[in-house]
Image (cartoon, rainbow over all chains, first blue to last red):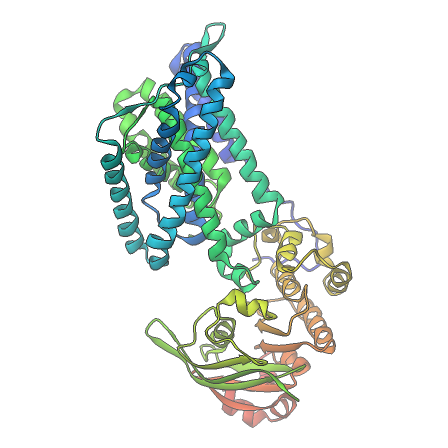
Length: 336
Length: 240
């Protein structure tokens, strides 16, 4: 390898924009296949909204993977718990939710989302201390413990709320669509896109503009060296784990509103998508997670429209293709 | 002269391997102590055990009046121990500045300390906002050492800083370490480069098979070729 002398100018850092172009290229590629511009726009909006919700749920998991090498197969429990906790606020105030006033809707929706995040975050604290702390560095045991935790959480939800599906109707002001010519874009999807984008920007600001963010990025890359600099990375990890759990709870509320229903195993299918997103994005990479979530949602929506028979395997095929191109994901942050 | 660091009967196991087999050593305050030995003798394990990165299975490690063998790595670092690993371990995704901001744990970067560091390593000033991953091997080593000295440390543990570097960069590193030494730092330095070892070392410890097999003055070892050949299997003059 050629070594630079101490004072040689550095080669300009390359900006790796290929992954960013991937969703754009995919969206453009399917236009002729879909045929109708309005269908394409509707599917693209649906993909972006779905992608943002998956990103919200997956962002914490990718940092947990990257930072502490913890395989948390129970992440879906935070999603379901978040959704159920929201019903505690939304059900008693159903009249306010169905009132035709945005402010009245938000006055109920916002506390419901915040309570869900708080409870999911607190549950994250318990899970980390009780289930994960004893099995750090032991992947097989982590899988067993967190999968067991997920089953216990699901059964507890069934015991508390019953086995029936609980309806969670959209607030009145978020029903319907924005009509742009021939194109109808659901209002709720626009809200989901905006919330996802805001969370992505917030996470990026924290990671890039604060010392806490520097520590998380450094810890994802080399946690041992962060400790050798005097930082207690376990505490940092606990904070990241709780934040990731809280975000999963928020994602659960948003997904439940999207589907307009809540049930204890609602996260089962989502968990597969979330893991695909984390893997193709690159463990620990928030940027990769963001792009991966959009890609997964695009493949699900475009694939479901164009080749419905392939819908079930389309995301697996996407993961295989991405990993053949970049074996450590779109943006490799860790060496794992 | 008082001893800043003392290891007594330290054993370290990594998995089923018994690497350190009863290490006894002292590092006097304000001196540079060289830790020499063949590959696989246990030098890196010794530094990592002191730093708490691998837990000693038995024995005592004292830093001044504090016992540290059971302490976690962050606590040992907070007692004033700086560590420069063999792999350099700079944070590639962070800029040079961000690497140093993290290393300055107790507050903002001290401008005078930075100027002092830039005096040795002007490349770090030049590439201040560049990602550390894009630096050359020598520049990464400069950053790794700068990170260890950005704040005053009681003890520096440095693992083979000149390994694989171009001669001009090795010279700059030696000058830097000499200056750090002149400022009164206490250093335990693993080094395979004889020139660097002779220039920097006050005392020397030689390891073999996980134990200390020789301790004495660096100058005495440098002058005694038969002793070098017996302890290290080759003359230091031929190994630089």
